[in-house]
Image 1 (spheres, rainbow, N blue to C red):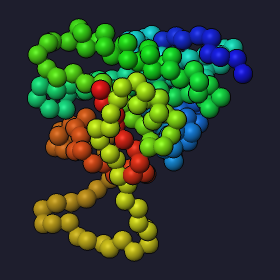
Image 2 (image 1 turned 90 degrees about the vertical axis):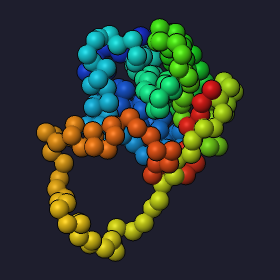
Image 3 (image 1 turned 120 degrees about the vertical axis):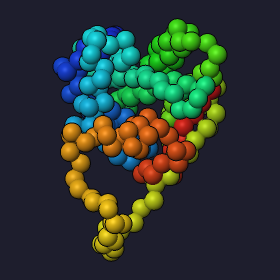
Image 4 (image 1 turned 45 degrees about the horizontal axis):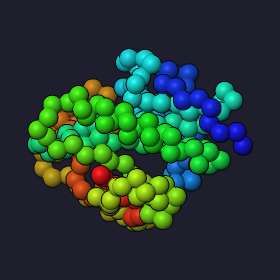
Amino acid sequence: MSPMDRLRLFQGEADLGGMLEVSDESMLMDGMGMINDPDSFRAVYSGYMDSLPSENAIVAEARGSIVGQGLVWWRDVAEGQRIYSYSTSVLPEFLDDRAGLMDWAEARLIRTASQHPPGIEKVLETQAVQGTRLESMVRARGYAPARRFVEMVRSLDDIPVVPAPGGISIMPAAEETICEAWAVAGGPLRTTGVTARRTGRRRGFRK
């Protein structure tokens, strides 16, 4: 198998089909036990289309086909602390080339953090499932476990119907109320430390 022969910045809509295929195969290889919803995947990248080519998303190619990708972002999770996160995806046959994407992501985040105001704690973060090749790669780069994600599974056949408390109504989400709902919940980028997920083995790693 030919190695990755080109790394380039994300160009927009035309890249999404190939990137989705890579992400799905990589998630299964990485032990996530699920694949992407296409609409949700497109929504994640919509914010990276404001300024193209995006310097915060990268595409890896081999012989003109997309075989890998990397994505970076950052957020404030507490007063005085900013988390710089990244994820990478590769087709299984290009697993040995994944380190190049991780190098790019870390370099991009370190450069970004150096341009942000001093005086706050700045931490690199990524995720991996325990016991996978990705976890080994992450640990080898100096990361240590910081968070664990847990999923609780139950049958859908016997869920009781419980009425809402007085004065509260339940209805399908509408586009015009999404922002208001997120604001009430504290914002989409807040973390609670434990999140329901498919596997109890997935961890957030920081260094």
